Figure (cartoon, rainbow, N blue to C red):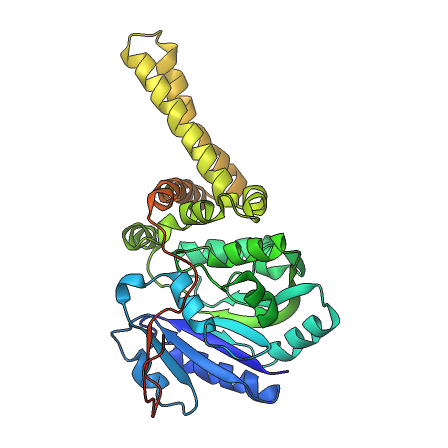
Length: 343
């Protein structure tokens, strides 16, 4: 059984050496494999560092205007010639033993297209990743069993992906793992997470609110809308509708905004004074609900802002123009002794 590990990266000079070294070490434990760095146009020393590892293929996106999370993942996959493929982010360290566990699981579970393991958040200084680690302890990547997606990477059967036509939708700025899981589910495949360590994730160190603003500016926040638009009329549409929490959050926020606007209009039109009290109650209800649910005023407020950003992103993504999902993504081969461009 041969294997390839794709590492998608953009300006990851702090972590890329550890990511590559962990991928090489994991491959060595299963008899070898290919390691591919899919670089989305780094302007730091990411590529320079990667070229210090002989045998690592380095493909750099030719047109930075095509940059997205989905593009990086598809670039990492598109030239793979192996039976199994693991997707790793450039800020992650792969546990050296995970591939052995993952291959054993897929060998004994032919109905599963992919498998992941436990994700350990190394940076919980930001409220974003503090909340993610907390959610993972409750559900997410801390729980073994069948799942609807493999956030933070997983080991995939290449044959299952080839049957879909592509690994990641290059239009998606986020939630490409969910989209892939929905497409696999609609094709009759299962995905699972097993109770063994998979990766250590070194997420952004920026503050949570600053990170949200960056996501709005970069297009990342539009991911939910892009997922919905991509699924419309496709076999995986109902998988998305039933399981995509961001859709439910957006509907709830749209309803909240509508109620606030209606009550404000009634108040300005001279309705009874109780309308203004109702407006205040409706305005504060989501915050109170989330504070109680999260058991923290700080986390409750952050969750409310996150839900609103998701709703804004839903609109952004639904309106964004789509490109085709088939065909090679143009890339330059920057590997040591590379001879010609790919794509």
